Length: 239
Image (cartoon, rainbow, N blue to C red; front, side, top):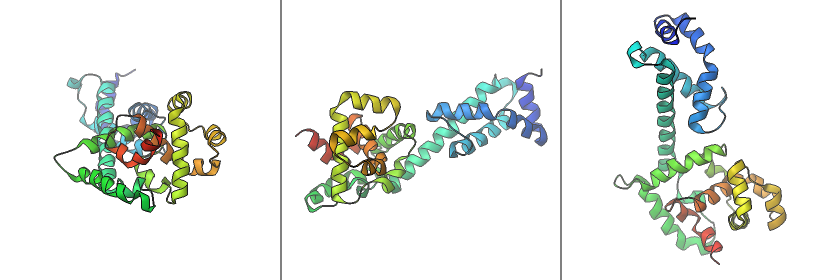
C-alpha cells in the first residue's frame, strides 16, 4: 500500500485523486473535528464544513519535509476550528451579549441595568479582553450541551415570572451538589427531578433549558464578568 504521505502529495496534484482521498478520510476528518469541539460531529454540522475545508488545505499545503501527513492534517483542522470558534465568540461578544440576554424585566431590576451595561461595554474595550476571553471559554462548555452563546438570546425568558421560575430551577441545581455533578457529567438537564423538587412546570424548564444551564455553568465556573449578568441568582443563593 502506498505511503499516506505520498498519497497526499499525489492528491494535491490531481483533482480526481483528491476527491477520492477526501472521501476515504471522512471519518478521520469527523474524528478530528469531534476531538476539538468535545462532542460528536456529523456531516450536517457546521464544524464538518470547516474541518473538510481545513483537510483540503492540509493536502494542498503538505510536503514530505513536514513529517506525517496525519499529524499535519490534525494540526491544520484544529487551528481552523479554533479560529472559527474564536470568530463566533467575537461575534457573540459584539452582537449577542447584551444586557437584554440576562435582563429581568421588572422595575426592581432597573438598578442592575447600569451594572449590566457597564459589563457589556467592556466587550468593546480593546484594552480589556477579560469578558471576551470568558465568552470564548464558556462557549466551549456550552458546545458540550449542544448549544451556543448566541442561542441564549432566543432561549432566555422574557417575562419576570418566567425568569423567577428559571432562577428557582438554577438555584436548586447549584444548592444540590449531586444534581449539579450529574448535570455536568451527563451534559443533560434533570428536568423531571427539578420540576418535582421545585414545582416549576416541566415545559418552562424544557423551553428555557439553555438559559438555566448557562446560568448554572457561569455561576459555578470562573466567569466573574459574565456572573454579573446573573447576579440576581447569586444573590438568591446567598439568602
